[in-house]
Amino acid sequence: MGVEEKLKALGLSIPEAPKPVAAYIPAVKLDNMVYTAGQLAFVKGELLYKGRLGKDLGIKEGYESARICVLNALAAVKGVAGSLDNIERIVKLTGYVNSTEDFTDQPKVLNGASELLKDIFGEAGLHARCAIGVNSLPLGASVELDLIVRIK
Image (cartoon, rainbow, N blue to C red; front, side, top):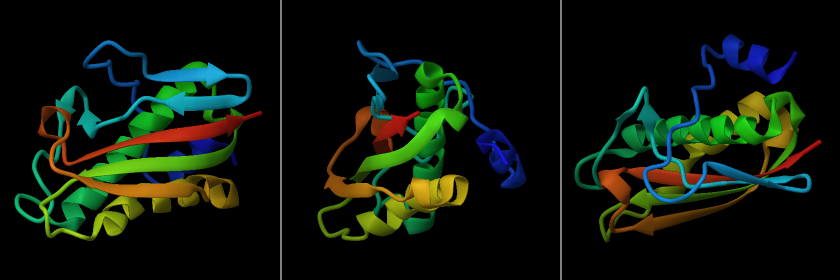
């Protein structure tokens, strides 16, 4: 089963890659590696889940935000790799969680992205990861993440 079919079976689809909100491109392909820019939880041009975890939002909303972010990151990968079926391995995910000083569940928030990558790609979706708490993100986003992916 190809990646697009797997996504369909999960009730998901890859959106169009979100347009950059500043001076950068969504992804860069260098040899057989793809590096994405940071992706926010945009759905059809609207940023969902604005605010800080531990104040405005809970883990559930952060988890959902991370899932949307990773779908947008995969859209950026698809834009330079041609097809998600060309992904050989998800190498690394770095995630930033807009959170209060005392919020320490950033890993639980980013599990939204990590678990989805495993559901889509199986063992090839297992990756190294950083979960970083920050006091602000662009446009008031709750989560931002980027991927490093190896392609065939």
